[in-house]
Image (cartoon, rainbow, N blue to C red; front, side, top):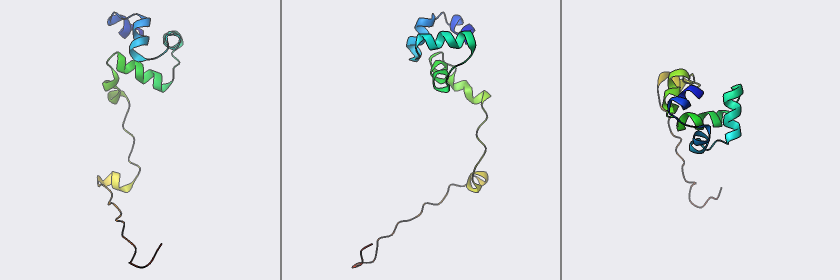
Length: 87
């Protein structure tokens, strides 16, 4: 990340402002590699690599049979109660 920031000629202060991540968090990230996912994604968006995350993060596996078969689940229709009866 640091190399990308420097390649874009951004100071830590500039990147912190552009991403909305506190400067102290950015400094700690560059020093230790530790950061929250939300802050990491904000930095990725600020240095224009957020769209490339799909290349390194595989999609979640399907969790339902409908997803496996590529179907969209049917919507359950709601029906009115018969007249004169209250629920």
